[in-house]
Amino acid sequence: MSLPTSPQRRLSLLVCLTAMLALLSFSSPASASVTCDRIAAPSGSDASGDGSASSPFATVSKLDGSLAPGQTGCLRTGTYGDKSTHHAITTGGSPSAPVTITAYPGEHPKLVGWVTVEASYTTLSGLEIDGSNTLFSDRRAEEAGCPVMSHAVSQALSITGAGDVFENNELYQSDASVRSVGIGIGWWGSGDNTIVRHNRIHDVGGCRAFDHLIYLSHGANVHIYGNWMWNNPHGWGVQVYPGATGAQIHDNVVDAAGSGFFFGDNASVTANTVQHNVVVNSTGLPEAGLSQGVAVSDYWTSAGSGNSFIENDSFNNPGGVSHTSHVLEAGNVTSDPQFVDASHHDYRVRPGSPVAAWSLWDGGNGAAPASTSPSPSPSPVVTLPPDIAALPNLAAGQPASASTSQSPAKRPAAAVDSNPVTQWAPRPRAHQWWQVDLGSPHRVGSIDIDWAASQSVGYRIQVSTDGRRWRRAASVSSAAPGWTVRRFSAMTARFVRVVDSHGNAPSALAIAEVRVTAPGATTARAARYRHARARRGARAARRHA
Image 1: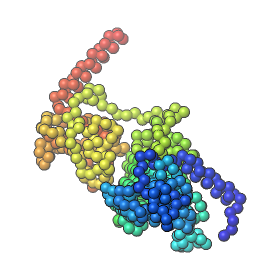
Image 2: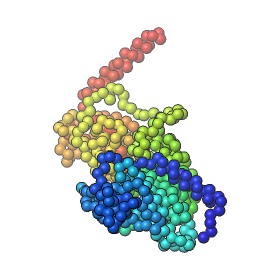
Image 3: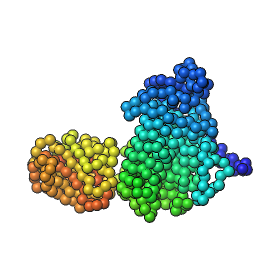
Image 4: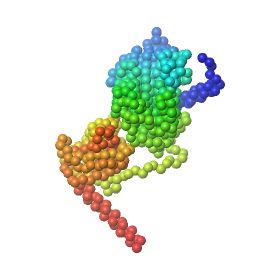
């Protein structure tokens, strides 16, 4: 293999400098509160060490093998392994007592090589991981964009147990000549209930359209959220294929990948939700039919079912938001997210950002500073008239239930918690509903709904005294985002239900707040409001007479 030319050397130097800048902003979440049951250090010994502070082990695998469920192994500052090292994590815990491997309080360990998390209920946190290794040699020459290699490339960091957590880590592949997939979930084993959160994942990939920042292969109920991912023109930010189901992928940033997210052409790829992610500067994947980068794509001849891409921000992606045929899309925007400093990979969003209300990660750096330039004027918000807003809400704080919920954060109770920021949203399925138990029968004559959905919705209002037999109180064919007030003939009801009326199409319901009021109070308050307006109008007329 020939040596790099001078421009290639300059490019490699630039990549290294970028990685160094990112690492300067990375700090381990380990603190003095961490209790280290066993310890490893580069100067330790697997042969004679006992894992104590005075006699530490030397390797990650030895440290892992010494831990019991509920225990924590700590790594002292220094480098563990090289490109030929396989760090196998094979000791598992339990749901209530996971095994944890993390940084020693206040220190900064670095792992080099191939990391596999093969046990269940294992947490890996607070580590710098250079995933460069030479342990994968199965490069197929027939794959477009995958050149015939004269050398092996990197195995991806692999998570194959159940209930594993990968959090607050920095993962990259410093050697551009051996780059491959960043993280693989469920390539073998289970992958169920894996959590990947609050990580910086960057500078991976070398085989166009085959190497991704995160490759979600198999696993049920996988959660991928709050990650900052950048610099992989060779694949997607997250690929979901061929057997993942029920994944929740939200509040991530994907910058300068080939494209943002991908749903594969397999019937087992079902009910996966991608929401509140920011995808910027996608470069395109010609080998996958994407000459220009997009935020989301799928295979256009076949795919799984129930997958959704909703309420995401796609900015500066030349191919637009999507190239899909089997994915529910709703409420996506194309706004500048107003990052603090994307060029140095500070993806915090400034106050006033159109996505500031999302649960995007702050990188462990605290709240973002205000912009030095004026923020664009926000879109007008539809609010309730003062007279309606002041009425007693019979539904406030009452027990609520629903057909489904997208996540614990979007539970039914969020629609009656008097907090306009929270919301209930169902999974993207047909025939969804939400209801509230008022506690006892009331005379009901109005229901006001603050729609958090970003598209028009159709719905029915039903009432019941026993929760079994329902009467239709009102029907709305199209309600725009924001508040809608729907009055109807007074009825006695203990239960009030909102039902999606879009037939067999996946539901677009998303409710920030529900207000239920009695008909008498509404009429009296509205009359006083109209009378006050009339008096103000009369005074104004006299002033201008």
